[in-house]
Figure 1 (cartoon, rainbow, N blue to C red):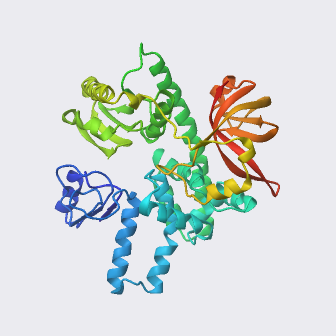
Figure 2 (tube, one colour; figure 1 turned 180 degrees about the vertical axis):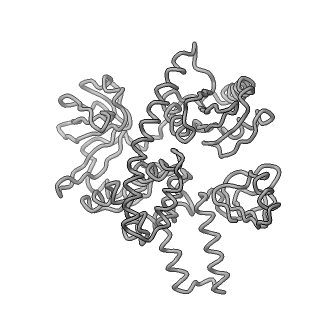
Length: 441
């Protein structure tokens, strides 16, 4: 058995496999615990004794490097024969997809995998991935806009459809999608995943509404948000926790209660390590693991209050030492007046792609921008804001994703944080500003 993206902390599970006659190879990218599993090999760049130069590979990246090493071993050469080289290149789009969706830094070797994987995405020979790009509308947008698949396409469109299956308890559908060689079967599964993603969004919205009500009912916002409910679905708790982090800017721990056991997910703010936080309460936890920004946990329901108090005490200590942890910041590259926003600027910015976690798209600011006319709410649930922005007689269309709740803050004049992007409509190119934040002047 070869594990991927897990196993380095699963000491008991690996021991059970070994006791039943299996040889286990663990490939993982998470922090190991003090006790290592009894596997014949543990491939994890996060091991203290590992000298691999890049420590922050995604789970799929570690598995890919193992396959790469096997190809070298089997070929007996550092320079691979064409059949091995072609095999590895064919799977680069899958590696790019997994790297983006694992939310690891798009730096170092991860950046190489993603850049070249995205460049081959539309020519992938995998029927499942090809069908998913088609069903989700990405192929049409890519051809219409004459561009490559972007990391954002994968993170916000493809990834959620793949994850929807596992989140709703039917992960085999995603596995079958990537394993099939039948185009008809791939198309059928892709449509099913599309429907499941819509169902996932509805479940997520219900939990977010209930969790928000629970937070609003508190007398004051605690150092960490920790909530649990019997009706919640474990598969979407990580997503909802991220939404709450964005709304309240507190590390958030959400769990589902079932038969006296709480299982859940945690998401963090910048600079706060949720695994380290959980480590303070490990005597009350059945298991936990993850990395600084995201983690999973399991504990007996009777321990809820003890764990909550311990996590809050850890957070309070962190906030006293580093008060700025609770002040979200945005790194702004420069103030850019509208007259300097050109196609050449966008071309230069695009040369820095792919953008993603820890290699964010550059953010700029513009001041005293006029909002012309009435902003419009757009999107399936009217969650986005479309507006026309004018400065010194130069106008651009602006889109603020997911900011419908703040539309009342738009006045005749605003300061904005944004980045410019190329928009293609009916074969014509135009410049659009993606507005990340706006403030009334």
